[in-house]
Amino acid sequence: MSKIIYDVLIIGGGPSGLAAAYLCHKHNLTYLVLESGKAIFQGIANTYPEGKLVYASRPKDAPEPFMVDELRPPDKPVSVENYLQYVQHFVQHENLHVETEVEFQDLKDTRDGLQIVTSKGDYRAKKVILSFGSNIPRELSVYGDAKMVAKNLEDPGKYIGLKTLVIGGGNTAADVIINILKTKREARDATPVYWAHKAEIFDVNKETAQRLGEEILLGGNIRLLPGAMPRIGEVDDAGVDRLVIRVNEFKQADGVDTYNGMSFPMKNVIACIGSQGPVPIFEKLNIQMIACSAGVCKIAHEGERLVLLTSEFESTRKGVYIIGGAISPSYMKISAGSIAEERHPNLIYTAINDAYNVIEAIRAKLIV
Ligand SMILES: Cc1cc2nc3c(=O)[nH]c(=O)nc-3n(C[C@H](O)[C@H](O)[C@H](O)COP(=O)(O)OP(=O)(O)OC[C@H]3O[C@@H](n4cnc5c(N)ncnc54)[C@H](O)[C@@H]3O)c2cc1C
Image 1 (spheres, rainbow, N blue to C red):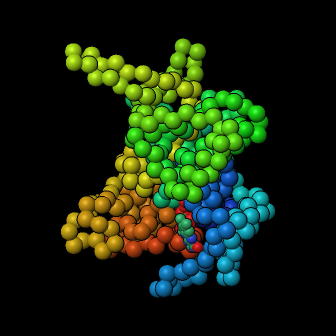
Image 2 (cartoon, rainbow, N blue to C red):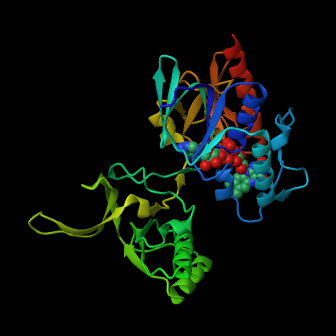
Image 3 (cartoon, helix red, strand yellow):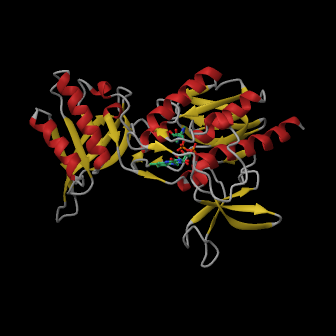
């Protein structure tokens, strides 16, 4: 574990996380951004369609300007690629401290603050800002640990020479497979890509199916595993993390079932099983949420659980703040002794201005 105790540890390098980082930098607070993706703004890079224009939208009733003007998208909309390029330059120019490919996993309270558990070891900080957005990849629910499994395709070249397993039945999984097949074909690599889905039928749109068909006709080596279920994450005798997947199952009258399974090194596996909101993470972190009962919430539906925050965005875990897309489209705000649902549009503007408000609050607390 690192000996440094940062003033602020920021989880997620999107607009909210980077705005927070820039403000820490400006006000001489020690800080570090941990981003699970390969680069900053990975959330935007993964979710915006190619060429999408980025708008500097502001909610109609918003009184303030963009409080970190340096990250504001231009008034005349530019493509997402241009905006990403601009932000990369800005981060390099300001020399903001970001570590990429580090996945936040857990938080522990310690005597001097908070211990942040990640895929690359532990960090320590006085305050933590959770700015990981709303688009959290689903975890494989298997017995044991499956944390080594990739959730998106960052470098298809990594799979050359490896029998690869892609899990998921939709367009994202199909796109990943098309990319790997193409890369393997260009490298004259004949190792197969296995495509596993828990249902019997794969569900892709016509355009994706056509591109996949083309790759197969060009020699792509794909093996379909419909009805296959990931079951166990384990470490084998050689110390290799493996994922065991059940590919078929035979029920026997005597109650002793038989099945066939396959076991892949986890580094060969990519799970494209969709994304979810951050509620399961808040649950794991013991951050209090409140369920909307009939007539209480205008934005969230009845039964939906909303995270409980102070007007400074501090959660019920002391020193842990939550901002940006992670609390959109609404959260429960504690103010003047009462609790009410607060609208929180999922916009770059909101993400940046949340960061401004939180850093102001943290500065006031750390300076005392
Ligand atoms: C298709 C689309 C178009 C949009 N267009 C616009 C627009 O034109 N204008 C506008 O204002 N808004 C737009 N939005 C909304 C805007 O993108 C979001 O409001 C904004 O990105 C939220 O910023 P954020 O920093 O809170 O979250 P994100 O941008 O989602 O950033 C979160 C970051 O955290 C990282 N992360 C996630 N989990 C972990 C973890 N466990 N450990 C470490 N890092 C993690 C992610 O990789 C990501 O980089 C659009 C959204 C979508 C989906």
